[in-house]
Image 1: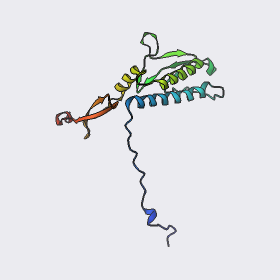
Image 2: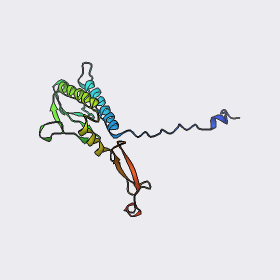
Image 3: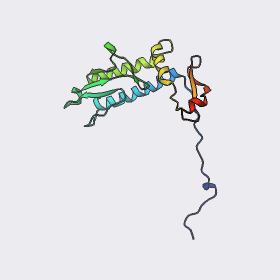
Image 4: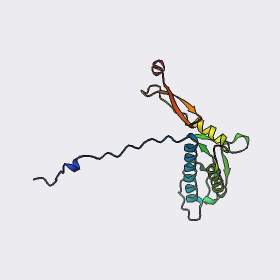
Length: 173
């Protein structure tokens, strides 16, 4: 006699509904992703340098900052900050600098200011941000893939759209 009773109804596996892929406009998607990186960076900076901080003994880089010069007390450290849109660092300083060095308190203030600035951008006020986002959003296709398509940016929808299947000659590459 078996100790396990198998019910026919429990034998069928319920598969979760597949998530429908929502095509967010490029501006909205990259603004959201940049804000998420800044939010995570702020949480991590507050965790290391805030009032109730319990910093790790080993420094760990964050999404938008890292410890560039460790000190006995975390408050005396030097922090390097940057801003990324997609995977590209944005120019944030003089002489085309993509990173800035500062104190932990200044870094937290800078991250908050960047978050406020990115959150306030619109298509009209964030043209440079939008151009960088368009560049970053271009689909990276695999020419050996069965679904290799040619994509073009459509300004009216703010999306990259497949305009044609790649020719068989391109697929053979």
